[in-house]
Length: 223
Image (cartoon, rainbow, N blue to C red):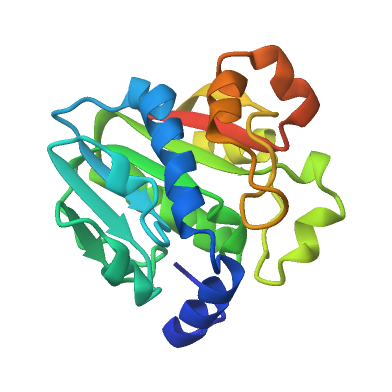
């Protein structure tokens, strides 16, 4: 990622932020991958988890090739054996060939980039590495519904909505195919750990999203 924090500072920050949450977060992501995000991931796909953190998403993915990208040293410790980690700044050229990926997934990451140019550079790298028709799937806090809470994390820099992200995706030669302004609740790092069966039910009831969802979901297809 492009960050004002060093890798060791990232390591300390996220170890503290997610302390005692690893088991629960893995349970949550197991449900999210198996019951929702798997609809966009073929078993034959090459998938990159951008800003993968502790690898809760990519470790759950069943695909031919799995990659994670993050500067946090703990990422290497948490990656499953089938996941290859790229420890690099995402706004700089990725160490992957052109048209080598089918899916780029990212969750709660773009808001941590320092500048809009970093975001644009990252999207252009994703576009270069995706195959024609490949998908970028982005989940993140929607500033429209979190005008105050959004800034409770001091490493949030970019304020985004589903519309602003879709706009820059279009500028980077993606076609936004899904734009959901309210998808998941805001955060799993704070508050009560709700039973994961409630998440499974929530995913099956989109009418609930308009009341509880504060994160957008955007899917862009490479043109």
